[in-house]
Length: 589
Image 1 (spheres, rainbow, N blue to C red):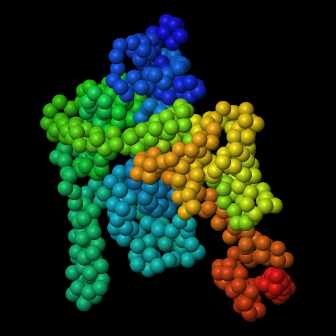
Image 2: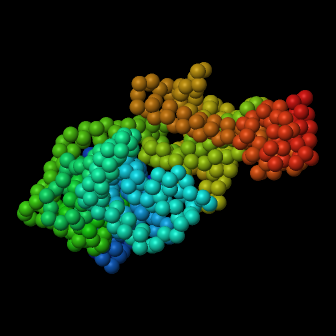
Image 3: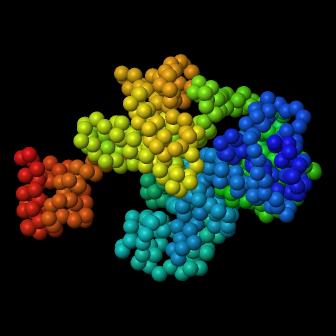
């Protein structure tokens, strides 16, 4: 069937999507010739990894584009949207910290990761947030930009320490801000001699006046500046242009990428990644760079190895992409490539081990339950206190890793019974999967319910009622509330080897669902305690309630407070009488 469909595929550029038996997209690619690329999957011999992927392909779709570049753009967007199992996915969304001078009437300096593109008032990246904050601490002492989030009505301590110009009470000339921004820019580019000289002069003056504490403070600032400005990774380039140096190396199964961030003539930070690939290592490198630079500001230039398609990368990213042939720039590129090669040799084993802990575990679980590999798992747990404040949680695991943006919390109906776990499980599953049907949401490959045969049967009844075909399993705890064994839909019991990776994974899933449910239940219960007592007192609104809790902390302390203590909070006598009457009545119950 697939081979017949291949005959109708055009030879034009485009993006293709491989589908499994459930219609889920498991791989997205792009090609200069769709027919030739798709045929390559189904003809000839492949390594074990690629063969395994091809066996899961039950169908494919494709979208024709005008150019290969359009195909690449579409491919990156589809990968981000569908998160296919066999594509390289930047699921951690790692971003580097930067120091930014905000674009406000009265600017301030902040450490931020939310950066869309490089601009003149953005400095970095820094290797970690600690380094960025330490640098910001030095800058805030040297340059008197405001420190507050919102302007106060009167100057704060920083004004009296000469670390703020107090725009809250003083009119500041915009040209002064321009001067400070220029000084900060020069400082972060390594031009610190002027500042250091001024601080040394102040230190000597303070010392001569026997103001030793002030002199020590200047000395500490000088030391901090020297630490900030110092770099053991300076590179001998004639200009201070921002560049990213990209090194790539690969073998038969994996590709390694190193990015060196050159800022102000120094290696400011580096990014390293090793990934497996299918058929084409260059495509995997493009996928990685395309996703990476959606979250990372681009520099003025990229240096890449000659093997990468520079023209397409340059057109896609919109920056100059070069392959230097000689001199210091070539040595930098060789350094990045060497780093990639070293990583490929030393870290490939750990990457394979990590794969066993994720996809290997999912394959083992699939074999145990006789289902397709469950790349998308939704797990449920309930929590309540003798039937009060019942809640349920849904945690989601994609590719064996938590997908916290997909977690959901449910407040359930209170049951007449003190223990209504089956009722609660039935309610939450009905609400969740009715919503899945109504909104045509992506269906999971496997549902886990916390509990034994009764919870499992309740879940099965709901899924049958909604006419869904989703595998269900029960995670059963032991007497000490630890993961013990697994139940499948036919109530077969599967004992778990306590030292296995599968047991560790299932324990984590169960504990995560329990943690999420219990945290929500506690928050709801504590909120309910305050609401049930304070919110029904006449005259006590949201502001008064906050004042009472801020001042007295607990209901008991409010109950025992004197009338004068309550009047000191600007509460009138009528409301005080209502508070006393209600709380004392509550105590008599």
